[in-house]
Image (tube, rainbow, N blue to C red):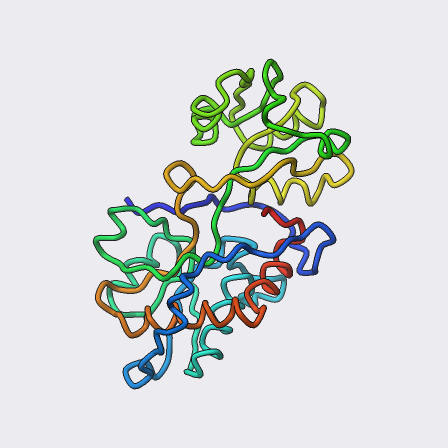
Length: 271
């Protein structure tokens, strides 16, 4: 069974630059700038996505397909200077559509698992998914993970973030919750000193709770625990399309377009 990296989130998206947003780290391989795409076999890129994964790919009130992934796909095509289409499929059919040559690339949060790697090749990472601490606003400035000994940290039970705490911060008092929302609410209610979990999901919660809490400390990138991040899938062996996408990602980072899209769709930056 193919799985998504993230569950569908019911949220309202502010497509504006937020005061707390931060630029992206550089995830693309800098050497890819030297890989000039051979455009002869890539007259166009047909992107497949879904319509139920806000703020990445979803439909607005008028039914138009919008989101971070939609904008990114179109920027990639513009940078490579090829034709571009973006078509939405139900999630359970999207990977089959790519296998059946209904599209050239899937930009929908497909997990970089060994099973998926048997069917697809992946572009460079364009968005990593770190773990981060959240505390009440008054505690953000003086936060240090070294000072958490004996304090309570809320986390989703059974998550990779709970494993991170057990592995690297065994002296903290871990309080498990069924969901990230419940764990974050415990910090807001002052029944937990901090929260640790997926930074992107926490950013959506913080967007609605700016007066309460904020990110504290640095982001933690642990691919072995939190996943490699987000990449674009192409059918295995379709190197021309993959190289064109990788080249475009490097160029979009260099000219600031990738950061601009991040700031537009994530008002509370999670880096």
